[in-house]
Each structure stands twice: as C-alpha cells, then as structure tokens.
Length: 194
Image (tube, rainbow, N blue to C red; front, side):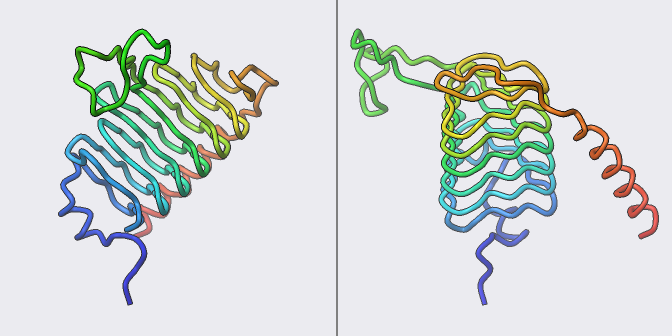
C-alpha cells in the first residue's frame, strides 16, 4: 500500500536544498525549484499545495491543502510553530496592476514591472483560510490573521488581524510561549530517556 506522503528516501532524492526529519509532504503537492527550498523538522505539507522558488520552513510547521507559496528570488521564510490554513496564497513576487506595464510570466521582463520583496512569517503565527499575503509583508511572532484577509504590511507581534486590507482587531494571548517552553522541556526529557 502506497502512503499519500513521500517517504524519507523519496524526499532525499527530490533534491531539496535541505530537508529535516519527520517531514510529511503530500505526493499531490507541486514542487518547483526544489534546490532553493529548505525544510526543517516536523513539517507537514498537505494535498494540492504549491511550493515554488526560494522558501525556508522552520520546525513544527503545517501547510494545509491548496495553499501556495510563491517564493521567487526574494523568498518566503516561515518560522517555527507556524500554521497556514487551507487556500492561502503567499507571494514574494507580484505583477504591476496599474496598466502601465504588461503582465504574466510569458512576457519578456523589459515589458513588465514586477514587485519583489521577501515575506517573513514569524514563530507561532497562524493564518486563516483563504488569506492573501503580498510581497514585503511581515507577520511578526505570535500574529493571528483571520480567514479571508489580505496582508500587505508589517503586522505587530502578538496581535490578531482581519480584513481587506487587514487591520488590528485585538491583542493575542501569549500563553503559547509557556506551552512552547513546556513542550521543549518534555521533548528534551524524552531525548535523554531514549
């Protein structure tokens, strides 16, 4: 019986720049430019996701079904314990919509004005379903973004945002920091016992 996730041996042969342990990537995910993709430990990428361009994933990350990461050359960095729900689009590159230039990847570069800037998604960030994150966005540590929101700026740590474009709704609990500490202590204890 074939598993719906790539095996460890298969992951090593795909050609990622780096891939950690306990990585689960769906066989139904689309992977482009894998030599520019770094994947940490304990990462899961579900069905129908797209990973393209320069991408760095930390540890304990989940990327749910139909989510697309378009890293381009500038890149997308996602820190530990982040969770991206389904149908999210993250862009580090975008066409100019003004009508002053042409668009799409089939048009030569001299006729386009492509915006390109890195996207940073911090530790303990959670992004709700159907969000769009644009080039240059920074989701600082502990940020929560409500579903169907659009991010186009820096979001301040430990706050909840929602809307198009998103705006701050309220502060987010920092109890996750205590849970992370407990989790890491238990993990360290288990490593010593093995």
